[in-house]
Length: 300
Image (cartoon, rainbow, N blue to C red; front, side):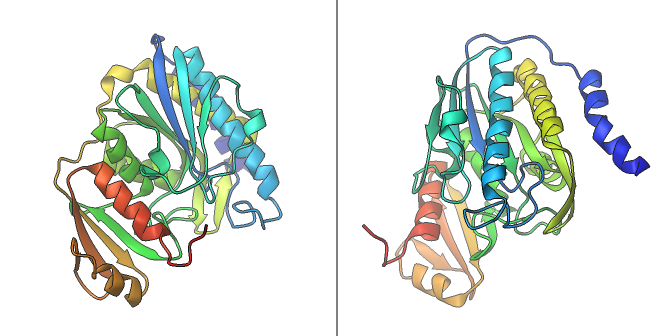
């Protein structure tokens, strides 16, 4: 009990120790929101329409995004685009978002979880993110598809969704300045991408378990970290992967790799892995979206 009390009161102490710095002016901010990293999320019970806690955690996800929006505004953001990037892309409660933001919903999208990003944005923020499929730690750790993929690599580097998305933003010169989620994703994102502010809203105990903050504490922490990030915006650099970029995708099953290798621009590296080379991250993201979304049975 003593350890839990210390952990839950750490938010206030952390906020006091790292106050936000100077406000910027006329910032344009991009927010990409996933759900596995939202406070309290641990299993499919919270993550999809069939889960008995899904409706509750849609609201909590929305409030985490709103905490980031409110904090960005306090730091000078005048234009904010939000990408609903979990599951069916229809999770955020649109009526609970501020009237002057815009929202990306549903799939497919050429830039996946970063649809709408361009060179006019000053910063990108990741809310509710999770660690990679090759990470041995993290709540619901996966990369793009937990059901179908075992690894995604760019230029030989093992990717998490955060680093793929940071590279897409980097193509447009936009730095990722803050990420929220469990301790595993914050550590992994910093290791792969580089310096960014991190809001740890829960601590992974396994794929389906965590020690977690309460929602109100997570909102406060997210707001504090967004303010800290935008207060030192000049210290961040975009995560850029110079082209041509080599993408490797490893599937759990043989058949997808075999069939994808029929395409003239795809090589089969081994029984489960294919390789594709794109000139930039737009080509890479379009190829990943096609690979993970296409089915001959697609309708309409």
